[in-house]
Image (cartoon, rainbow, N blue to C red; front, side, top):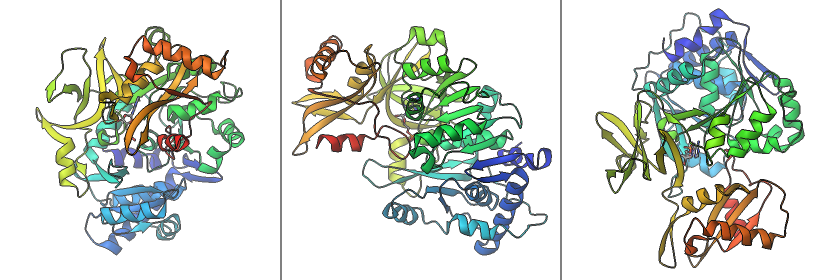
Length: 486
Ligand code: AMP
């Protein structure tokens, strides 16, 4: 069955089951089917037979789901745009993508209300684009990652086999905005298995009290979020099994999962599994996974990010060649889940994507190594700086700081003067409230770090925080942290 057939079958098998809950709004599988067909029919009438991308602009409204499926059924890839994006950024994306239309919830609502009898969706070939997600480029201009039907089905096929969701029974947490590829994990896992997607909107996320009352009523069984969001929730003592008795799985991607966070979740939710997965948008959400259990926690800190999914390969390269077993290098992902490339950017695409043994391969810019068959993420290659002539990987310092016993999480930034790195600053979240003064703890951490790294890699300045500020996608906001240093 194609992914679309999997999704559409639920309007036959469980028409009244809820496909989406967001605030006060409810959308059943029957409504999702009828409305997405109606929208698709209208789009065909309006735009004729072409496959130009269409932008779907909104937040967590049910119309977002109708919009996504409506576009796909009409043969158009969709570009999800969260309404929190600044206007200038939206304009830049519309321009760069040549999107034929900007669909808002109001427009989707109006265009999906006339029933479409006997509508037949356009049959997408495996290499037709399904969605295009824009991520930030290193130059500051956003780049559109094109994900084909084959790439998306390679991801969903894998996770369905691995995660064994109970048909028409799961409730998936949707924390990430739809413009972030983490949301693809909950959205399509839910829709393909007849699940209910339970969205948290930004007003709720901004107010911890509201988060916990929403979670308490959610019946969430599969949690999908960034580790940072789970860490934020763990600060609340009520965040435990009594609040969410149905929870079976915590499923993470997008940034480092601290062992401390995984351990706390296993303790507070004894009936739940904790999964770490790794991958960039360019390789469709995730390529590796592992279940983090007590044995893994006892053996590894930092945690591994998993083993590659079937049909995909992970290679570690340095200076254009595969490294010796166990050595560190750049993570290359090859397989069906790798993107077709960046929209309308052949040069950028040629720079990051290659063919490798007949498979499409992506150069992630992430550093990693294998140990015991597990992939470990060792930071970003492009946070490389020169400090007083020394070549330093920021990710290297962060990984070593995170490995210290009293450190839960750490971000390291260069402090610039006239565009050059002057010294390094470390932002640190401690596992426990400090027993001494900040000065004493900084000194102790420097000493411990000095056991693992050369002197020139030891941050001069330490700032202790209870939480990192988060980006709209729920990751540690490095820009805000850098501003704090200015
Ligand atoms: P995005 O394309 O926004 O999903 O960001 C992808 C990047 O997030 C990857 O290239 C990694 O640098 C980082 N990342 C994703 N998953 C993990 C993970 N499990 N652990 C550490 N870093 C991760």
